[in-house]
Image (cartoon, rainbow, N blue to C red; front, side, top):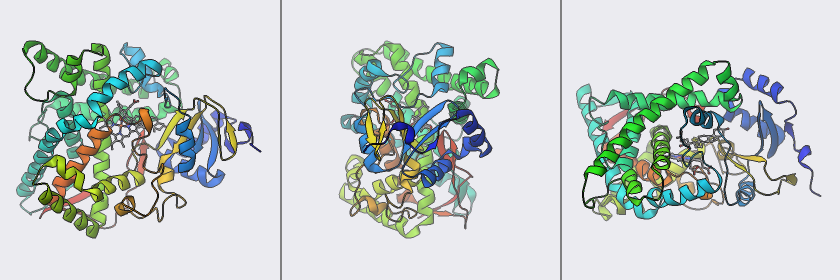
Length: 469
Ligand code: HEM
Ligand code: 2DC
C-alpha cells in the first residue's frame, strides 16, 4: 500500500523555525553536510522546508531514474530567484539557463547544435589544445623563474584564467590573452564577479531576494554589482565580434566560434543570443577550474595512479601521432578520473526537477509539481551505491560496478549541462598536457573539505607543487 505525501519523514512543517536552525548550523555553507546528515537520520527519502524553499530529497540511483522519467517535456530545475530577480530588475532577457517551457526548448534545440553536438567538438578541440599548450608553457616559465626547478602555489587563480580563456576561445573564436604575464584587468574583474555572484546567491535560496532588495540588504547589492560586472564584460566581448562580423565580407575560412555561428545562423534573436552567450561565459569559469583543481589534488595524493594516467596518455599520444581528437578517444582512465572527481567533489550539490506527473518513490506518493532533489553529493559518498566510496578509484568507471544513474555530475537528459562537451574536452586536454609535462605533489597532511557557495568549493587553499618531468 502506497503511503501519502504527508507521511514522508522530515522537517517541513515550520519553514521559519527550520531556517533559524539552518542558520545556526551555518547551513549557508554546510548544505552538503546537512543533506548527508538528513539522509542518515531520515533514510533514503525526506521532505524539507527551509525558509520558503520546499523539497523532497532522494539519494538512490533507482529513484533518480524514476525522477527523471517524470521530468516531462519541459524539464524545470529549482528556480534560483536571485538570478531571475536580477534580470527582471535590470530588464535583461533570460537565457537558456533561466528560461522555461516552450521558450526554453526552442532556444535549447538551436543551441544544442552549436554547443553540445559531437560535430562541433571537432572545431573546439584545436582551440582548446592551443590554450592547454599555452598553460603548460606558462607553468614552465614560472618554474624557471623560481630558480628551484619547481613551483609551489595555490593554482586556483591560474585555473580560473585557463577556464575563462578556454571557454572564450570557443565562444568568440578569439583569444583573450589570459595566459600572458600582463592580463586585461577587466578580465580579472570578470573572474572576481563570478565568484562574488555565486557566493551571494546561496543566502538568497532561502530568503526571497525581493525582500532583501526592499530592505537594501548588502547581499542583494553585492549580487547586483557582481552580475553587472559579468554582463558588462560579456557585452564588450559580444559587441566586438558583432562589429567584426558586420565588416567582414564572404564566408569565414576557419571556424569563427559559437557566437559568430549563432549570429550567422540567424535563428535566435540577438537578445536571446546575448543572454545565452553571457550565461555560457559565466558558467564556464568556476565549474571546470574547480573540478581540475580537485583532480590535481587527488592525483597528488595518489602518486601511483598519477603514473598510471601518465602512461595511458603517453600511449595515446604515440598511437594517435599527436592528433588530439584521436587522443581523446584513447584515455578511458583520464575520463574515469574526471568522473571520480565529480563523484566525490561534485560542482552541484543536488539535481532538481519540478516533476510533471505524480510518482511513487520509496513507496510514498509524490504529487505532480513537487520539487524533487537528488542529493548528488550524498549519493557519491553512499556505501550502498559505491563500493568503498571514500576511495578515489578512476578504474571503477571502466568495469565491474554498474553505472546506472550513477554518473550524473552534469545532470541528466535534455536539460543537462549545455557546456558539458566543452567542459569535458577542456578538462581532458588540460590533464593530458599537465601529465605530459609535470609531476604534481602536495604538502603533507592537509585535509581539504568542501564548502557550499552555491557550487561546492574547497574550504581552504590547495597548495600543489609542480615539477618538470
Ligand atoms: C547546467 C554541471 C561546466 C553551462 C548545469 C547543470 C549541472 C552542471 C549539474 C544542471 C543540469 C541539470 O539540471 O540536469 C556542470 C559541471 C561542469 C559544468 C560539473 C564542469 C565540470 C559548464 C560549462 C558551461 C556550463 C563549461 C559553459 C560553457 C551550463 C548551462 C547550464 C548548465 C548554460 C543550463 C542549461 C539549461 O538549463 O538548459 N551544469 N557544468 N557548464 N551548465 Fe554546466
Ligand atoms: C545549488 O539548492 C543548490 O552549472 C541549490 O554553470 C539547488 C541548485 C540549483 C541550480 C544549480 C545550483 C544548485 C548549483 C549551480 C548550477 C545550478 C544550475 C546551473 C549551475 C549547477 C545545485 C551551474 C554552475 C551553471 C551556472 C551558470 C551561470 C552562473 C551563468
